[in-house]
Image (cartoon, rainbow, N blue to C red; front, top):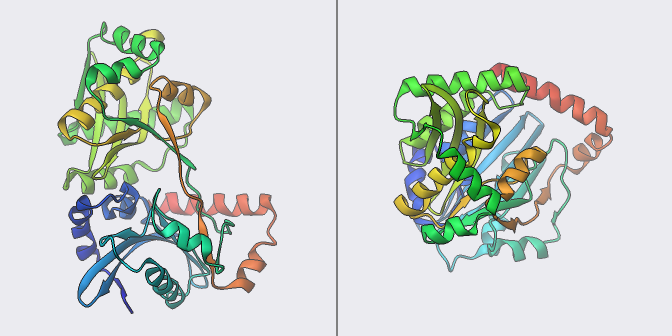
Amino acid sequence: MPWQSLSRKEAYKWNEKLKATDAAFNQYPYYVSGEYNSFFSKAVFIKYVEQQEEIAFASIIQIGFFAFKVGIIDGGPVLLKPNADVAKIITELKEFARARSYMHLQMRPPVGSSFISILKADDSFDEQIYFPFHLKVEFDLNIYNKPEEELLAGFKLQGRRKIVLAARVPYEFKKVEDEKTLNDIRRLFNNVTKTKGYGFLPFKIYEAIYKEGKKYNLCDFYTAYLNGDLVNVVLIVKDACSFYHYTSALIVKGFKASESPPAKLHYFIMQDCFYKEHKEFYNISFGGSDNLIRFKELFNPVEIEKPPYYTFVIKKKMLHLLSKFSSNDTTYLRNILKVIDNLFH
């Protein structure tokens, strides 16, 4: 079979190999293995080989177990050769999914990918999301690289004002380089959860992504300190083209709301993204609370629509049985599985 499973050791080498491609961060092993590593989900890595030449790569999120098991490819597969036979790669991928005994294989190809037209024309794929489902946001919010003066001028007036006002406060902005700061970040996330009730992932997931990604310069925590106290943190995950705002935490302590540090912290990150690492864009991430969405809009990001998910159904009877669950039953079951996952982590 042209699609070959990779050992964990071999898969981690692809953190460097993928830098030569336009693969998004959610196909990099450092990220997928960090987020999906629990009782109910795990990362599977495969490569497509013809005549001893590597043609494509994919990170699969495997959710479930025994007969109730699905595969999800988010942002992939990644093509390594521009003249590859895409239709054949998809056909072989379906065979791989059958061999793994998945109920279905759910795929979202990259924006602009040649896979999209093939999947759209293939009657064995549909655009329905089945249970147990995995669904990410439908858009990206990108801020593109441009000269610094133009970058600032492109922000909304209120966004520029927040950056100016924050500059009047003696914040210290920096990247994490030591274990002590990581302990401060852990405490900040815990404090925000306790005081605001935000539903963060277990911190061990962020820590695993950070520590593995840092080895390849693919991940950073950025922080804002005030009078020795950590008040704001952003976790950045990277690929060859971009920085992505993965998660963040803020606690109001010792400053006015008008002098809040997030706008200046994001601007500080953008300066690294564009002028030190020369990335094409900064993805400030889509969604969040109403206040968070309004904040992101201050930077005038460009909204990029992602392709839909395409699903190749393998075990139709089993999926038909699960489809009889009511939405309340499905939500209840998903919450139980999340609790199990959190206990595992």
